[in-house]
Image (cartoon, rainbow over all chains, first blue to last red; front, side, top):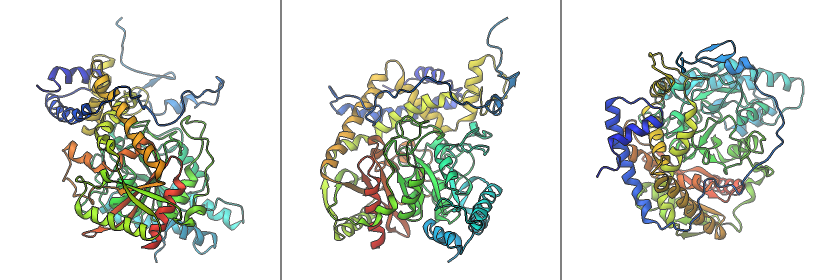
Length: 97
Length: 477
């Protein structure tokens, strides 16, 4: 059985917000399938009771004062925007009239 | 010797003595860039005027006898993954092709404070995903030691620029070997600091629990010098360590007395090209003859590093790269779109190259409902086992030794298109990022005229010790 189905590829592409062509769906199903097969070797290892390591530092939380600091001027923030209007980022209409 | 062939520390002495001006040194690099870039293609952007202005300022300060940073005036190249205020920063991706950051990365800011004129931004695998720099959206960088071969990656441009004497030194970033492997393949020195040693502020994120900024240099002393400039606590990166930064240069010639080294048998096994293995074994014997106590060590779990890395790194990347949506900065599709989601999907499909799309898909899959436990959580647990192998080894040994890369530089195009084959390039370097420890690659010989790197790994925040071992080795050959 294939480790990843065509439907799953389309589902993941939707989650990742990636538009795929028909060719890419086929190629990704093949490549992801090969990689997932390669990952199966991890199942050899018994990890029951092993804690996770999400990062290596011996720290949990870092606190600071919730005080306003310096921030970038609005024009700098908008300078790279693909589209803008009156100090806002502009996107296509997302709410129906 | 032509100016551009000097090491950074040799140039530093000549700058301080007034024998060479910073403008002369910068012009020498710019001439060299003009001469070799048509073949090497290390730079995405060359900032000639910007570098010369900074160099002139250093020379004027020096002429007036004002106090300057000791390294003032030594030109540097910066990987195009580090934000540079007012200067295009692309990550070698179409999606950031016209992005001009409004701020400097902290590592860049520190180079500026040290008055290092910036020559330009170097080519890389798109979003640092790759081991050959062939995944750049813009161009293929060639290895200055053999132009038909890759320079390694992802910091291939930074390595090639230094190896070709286009820059005295450079900055790269390393998530799974991206400083050390190209350094090894180009015959120079590359150092990945401990996770937390150098601020990641302004480093465009790939995998945030693994990424580190570090130096690529002509020799070990230069690596010590440049690490000293960029290391240290930064309030803008809460994972940066508050530990003091030692004088790495002053520690260099303390020798090998009392130091013990382990050689993980898992990193000198079947996956390593036999000719590379021979060169590395001779280098290890050389270190032993210099007084380093060497023995083999078993680290069985590091055999699982590659699958663990290729779950964790894409998972973090899938989250980090969600920000590229065509709204606030970067590329936006010009195709007609039906709604905002269509805008995101088309923008991202156009902006990201094939390897980046593959890793986003892989990471999204590993984090998705139904697969999270089997892939992502499983990988985080095996990461614990791998880190425990290192912790145990470092109870007994001060450093661990291995090849940096399992092969010498491969031919351009040879491995492109085979995702698994390409990833084997990083089998010796990836465990280091998973454990968060520091490691340096130092040239240790050649196979068929192509450079081989020796990797020296150390305990967290003991960059001084790996530098000492690397220096002792370098001085003995």
